[in-house]
Amino acid sequence: MKKRNIKKKNTQNNFSKLSVFQNQKYKFKKKCPLSGKGAPIIDYKNIKLLKRYVSENGKILPSRITSVSQKKQRDLSLSIKRARNLALI
Image (cartoon, rainbow, N blue to C red; front, side):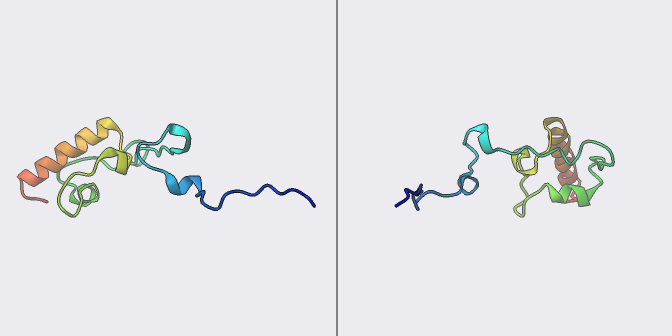
């Protein structure tokens, strides 16, 4: 009889076990959607853009979820706060 390599049935696919606190082995970094050619300009009057980066509860989504660069995240949060202050959002 031939010996077969039998894997344990309790192991899961590596991608299904991804979490925020894991090592860098399986992380995928996306490009910033607000940088580069043809990117929209961040402005407090652009309500359609700002609503994409605000949750249902009205909180600003973090950059680790939206994959926005740090500089653009600061501009985005400032614009969202201005729009809130002027009651646009």
